[in-house]
Image (cartoon, rainbow, N blue to C red; front, top):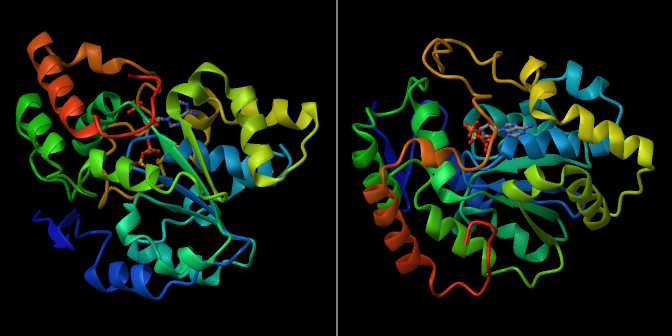
Length: 283
Ligand code: PPS
């Protein structure tokens, strides 16, 4: 299926349209009490939605067990989700994979809180490679090598990982943006939940934090049909060809890339990220 471009960025046609992207960029009004989960695809977006949903319900898992994830936190740039976002009673929990330049302009005058999740781009690429096999609107990705070249040049849906990360990191001094990595979540989920609560101004006791940690684990999410992607219809995703809750680990790229491919990735990473004044767990 052919992708289309909106302002030089590729998008898939089943879920997106120029009208929605333009509306979201220019007219969508962020509210001061919104919380927005921002991440490049395959960086742990669903994980963060689950964590923030559980924090919102003070660790009570009934919300995540009964309401589909996209109703709890719709992706504003997705055609069908935008309607959910517009009807969402405040305070809203919203998600997006948009790069900063396509994010609602209303953000500049808003106190909406942004939680930005980043992940090692090698793992992002590998996760995308496997996941796309199930996506009905994905192009044939070709070999790993061919896909890697598309990924490194940003010729993939949602554009370049490098540009996405640089765009968001550039506004890191704003008080209403919080950065966390998939790798930090893996290493210390409890500590990460505490930091997120602090940023959101949410006070949870230790028992409630414990419940957030337990119910946001890979295994709990994998078994929760409200969160594990199994509700996505076959017309959109072929569940026999790919699994959304695939491995949930860091470093799986080592199982796919050859030494030469990984060196090629490192060179491109250096070239694109050398100007960024921030270190990451994967550096
Ligand atoms: S999407 O479709 O772009 O919104 O995907 P996204 O949610 O950003 O990322 C999917 C990857 O996150 C993994 N995942 C988790 N890892 C650890 N713990 C938990 N609870 C969890 N939930 C989702 C998911 O397995 C995808 O990574 P891979 O590497 O493919 O397993």
